[in-house]
Image (cartoon, rainbow, N blue to C red; front, side, top):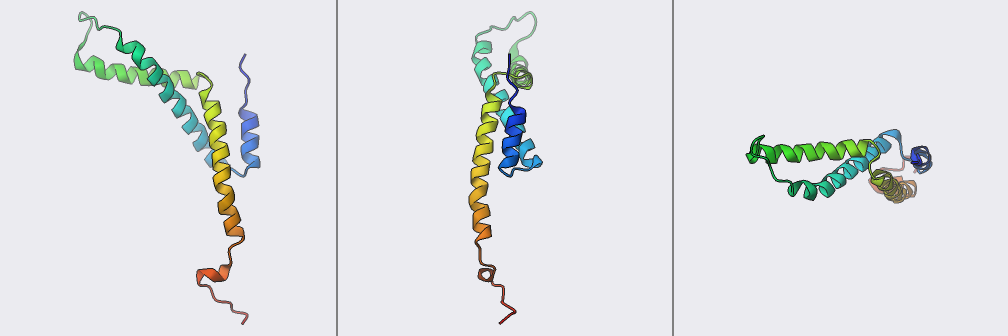
Length: 122
């Protein structure tokens, strides 16, 4: 049984001030990472399979085998995969919210007169 943590992560992200566009990018990045990870885990398994010359072989098969592995990785990640995407997503949310906090604090404490603006009241 797989626990669906997406609603909790989305709520945490919204609490951290991340908008929907940032969340979509984080989600896509996490899934892409899991797909790449799964692909690279499977690559050594397929490297040991010898090509049957009756049905193909050559450079074409080598190239398309890589494409096939990429698609296997994407499909496994899309179907839930190993759960790596959830962990990566949580880490990315945490990193993004930590990176946004100093920038927000700096903007809140910034003196508008430091930017070359003049004080019209004087």
